[in-house]
Structures are given as structure tokens and as C-alpha cells.
Length: 209
Image 1 (cartoon, helix red, strand yellow):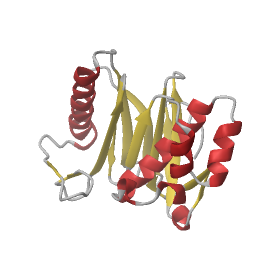
Image 2 (cartoon, helix red, strand yellow):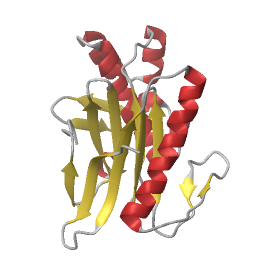
Image 3 (cartoon, rainbow, N blue to C red):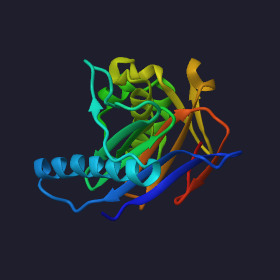
Image 4 (cartoon, rainbow, N blue to C red):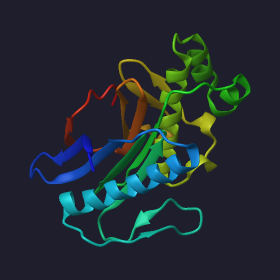
């Protein structure tokens, strides 16, 4: 499998790997078959990361009720995402949420429902509305997957301001950090992690953090 390392975080004093984000591009296929291929590829990325980065050969994934899927492991966390043409995996010693998607259009009534008024206005004013919307959407999704609450938390309360950096306008802003990448102008990948003082290495430009 041709996997790319997008992002790595290391403890500055020990150089111990804290987390890593992988992705792999996939051929476009019929929708149902493509969805299954993307999901299985994300699981393959997870298995490869477990072995390569943490020496774990066997691990089970469990989902209790509506909670997010989690590894049955003492110290490792993981999160997966996939979209048309891409599968991504984030895992490590920290809780993590990740989301990816292609830029896509959104109808005005949906925009008003899931965005804060300031976000909706910024998207409507953007030259590339599809990319602007998908950048916000993946950030909201990554945070929801990080906390495990998903879309049960009203999305319009998760407000972001995008510029040279990401500003999370939320009471939890002091506790989390975000990274966002646009891969090949085709896919947007957003990652949410607990705020920490780590040495960050990126194979692609991290647009905002």
C-alpha cells in the first residue's frame, strides 16, 4: 500500500512518537464499491501504523452505543476518515479526530443551519465557496470525532475563523489544536488534537494550526 505520512508529533525531550497521520490516494470507482474500498483502506492504514509505529500486531476496535470507535488498548488512540479518492488514518498516544473530504457545494438553507452567521457570511463572500465550506466542515467534523460527540453537538456552535491561522471561537479553544492540509487541491484534511507542546513535522504544508 502506498501510504503517505502527512503529520507527525514527537515529545521534544524524549523524541518519542506521540501521533502520526497517514493517507493514501485511491482510484475513483462506482460509489458503493468505492465507499467500501475507502473504508477498508483506512483500516489497512491503521493496521500498518499500529505495527510500524507502535509494534502492535493485534488490536480490536470497539464501539459502545453511539460513542466513536476506539481501540481496545491501554494507551493508543485512533480515528479514521475517507472520502472519494482518499483514505486517512490518525493514531497515537493522544486522543485524535480526523476528517477529510473533497470541496463540495452546499445549499444556503444547510449553510445557515450548520454554520455560525459569521461563518456563513465568510463562505458566501469567498471566491471559492466549495473549498471555504469544506474547510469549515472538516474542522467541525474533526472536533466532533475528537470529543466523540459527533454531530450531536450543534454544529453552528463550533465556530471557526480562517485566515493565516485557525481560530476556534469556543470555550474549548484553550484545550485543543487543529491542523489542516489541502492535498493536491483535491482533498481537505483536518485534524484535532489536545493542545500540547510537541515537535511537529509535516510532509505537506500545514495551512493552519
